[in-house]
Length: 306
Image (cartoon, rainbow, N blue to C red):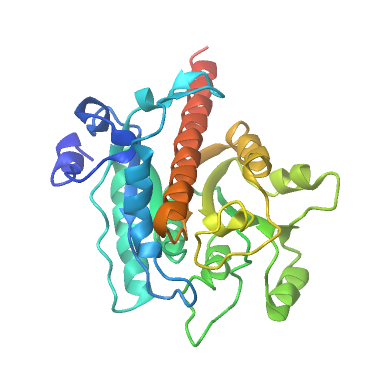
C-alpha cells in the first residue's frame, strides 16, 4: 500500500504513547502502531475497561525511554499512536469486524500492531486479520481465565468466548489460567489443549508451552493474568496468579525465539491512584515487549544479510 494511504487521516492529535514527539510518531519512521480500542460491551463485573487505553497512554509519558534490560532506547525503533478505534455497540461481531479492518490496514502499511483495550473481545478481530497475513500463525494467550466457552449468556462472541473463537482460526497456547468452568475443562481435556494452569506443577512447563507455538506468534495479554494483589484494577480479578518476573519468564522466552507479529493488552479497569499504578505497569510491559520484538527482528535481519 502506498505510504500516502497509510498516512492520510491517521495522525494522532491526542496524547501519544510514551509521550513521543512527532519525529518518533510519524508513520514513515514507525515500525509499531499503537492502536487504542476503548471498547466495552460484554463485561459483567467491574466496568471501566473502556477507559484503559487512555489511562495507559497517559501514564506511559512517565516511562524512561531507555530500558536497562534491553540496554537500548526502545523509542528509536519508531512507535506511532493511531486515533482510537471508535466503539460499535450494535453487536460484538460488528466491533470485531471493525478491529479486523483497522489491523489489516496497519499490517498492509508494514507496521506491527499493538492494541490497547478495552475488553478481550477485540482480540478476535486482530487474530482474524493476522491469520489473513500469516499462514503459520499461532496465538499465545496469557490470562487468569480460559475464555473457552462456546457461548455465554446466549452470545458466541464475547470476552468469555474469545479464545474458543480464536482456536477455530489457528493454534493457541494458554498460560496463567486458574479460573474456568467444568465445561471448559472437559473441552480442554477432550481436545488435549496446551494449557499451563497456574501455578505450574511440571518442571518442564515453559518448554512444553514453547513447543506448542509456531514460529509466528500473536500475543494477547489479559491484565488479570497477574495476581490480583499485584495488579488489582481489572474487570475480573483472580488471586494466585503470576507476578511481574513470572510473566516475563514467559514473554522473554517467546520474544527471543519466535517472531511476534503483534500483541494486545486488554481488560484493565483503572480507578483512582491504584488505577494509575496499574496503567503504568501495563505501559511498561507494552514498551518493553515492543523493545524485545524489535531486538529479535534486528537480529533476524542481521542473520539474513550475513
